[in-house]
Image 1 (cartoon, one colour):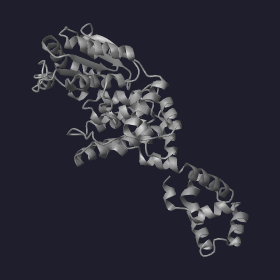
Image 2: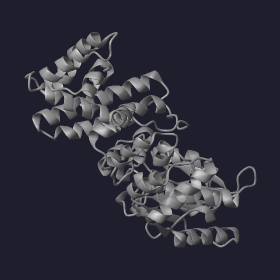
Image 3: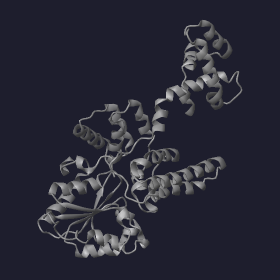
Length: 413
């Protein structure tokens, strides 16, 4: 599932970047329609470069019917044969040409695929329909049986100018606007990953400009949304584990993202309960690793927060709703100046109150807040109150006013 689905591009000419690869794919389609036999295509390259988009746009442009399989379907021979029994025919029941797409084919489970690779080879021998395989890594050992049986098409990462063009095209289609600074920031941190950039754009549409800080936190090899897709949509252990291992997003941030989006993806209460149980145990091992400086515990943490959450579901997850940015992270970002001010006050108070800054913020500061509020109640300009706090704690007039209006909610920060 992608936050922006493939329907926002209607023509191959609208796809930005990788022009040589796109010409090769168009020639493949031209030959198929002319009755010329062609090997299946193996479209490969980094995440977010337009591989799946190109395959679906090709089908839409040519009015071909798509039969698609992804990582969750590659279980055994029976699964593949059941889904593709009719798909191998050259036409659908409505007379459209069928296009068979194997997305994430490099997620095939290798020696444990229970006959899936054999079923795919049988399909290559007997299918009358064109076939496209899509992979991040075409050299994965589990799909070595396809080498020499496909024409390989590489998609490379997009340049910043291409990413900016993609963002502006989508904004125009959506009738939305964001600042040029936002577009530039998203393009910089996308590392050539258009899907990542589009998902970042959706976060920013309608958001406060300060939210752009959260985009910069995601300096990663694999986009966080792709990692979330692997966790929530996979039915295997290997896929989610590999996704979390290949992203540079830190563990705390990933736990927050998974926590926020479990109820958006899973439909059954039992599935939600199981996913949160796995995530809760992941946080236990995360804490143990930090306290004991024994980071072997991260193995268990990673397995629980990825495969544990993935395997908690008993039915197909909801893919209609977009991912939600963690509310806790948004709150921390928006309250950054407040926390900075509180820390400055707490450091002044440390001269008289011999506690840590954290303890002062969570206990002593609330007592002083109540004192200031009551002292200024009915007379906000009472100079005696400000003089007292200045002489006793070296607090400025603005800091005393802040204490008087301080909200208890900030103690949770």
